Length: 257
Image (cartoon, rainbow, N blue to C red; front, side, top):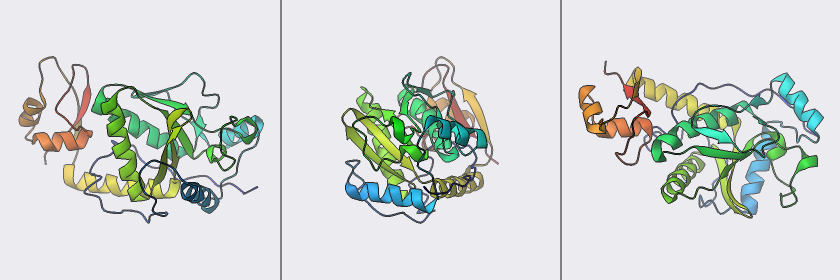
């Protein structure tokens, strides 16, 4: 069994901002086809990352609870933008996984108007489902499963984001078929470095931000104009593909310097 070490913490920033503008801020762990199809190579990369991080493959619920008590695993949720499925027995994960879920939840809701559903987090090896791979990294706490949405636009947005992040070398994502869902393995050190680099770049380019609650009758064009921004800037900051917004939605508005 590998020995464990606490993972680094990273700040909270909106998910997916300036992905295209930020060239590889981390060293890729290895390139797969980025098709979300999964492969033995993808499992090799995930297990190699677990080894490089000295992660333990937690074997029992008692051991999992011990890791949570030590702070090596942290609670995931509740927070706006995502929810845990009722079948999630252990709502704990590595700190960077919790950060990933928080960031993804907010951007997912802003992009397509629904919550993302987490269906699995850390699982001890003694409680892996029958169809789980014997090489699964769920027992290390570095993986999260996401429900497959019935909304095609939501699926398209999510798959694009996961594919982009695979190219950055900060995670491995697979669209599983039995049952259909998304399996995402986060590479903690790489993901933390990615977030920190993005945070620094955003601070330089966008400055401070205002959390603006959309009012009935608002449009992105009117909000952007009233704050001296372009619609494209506002969409990029909030990870929006289109111009649809709804009353009560909270969006980030950069404050010009």
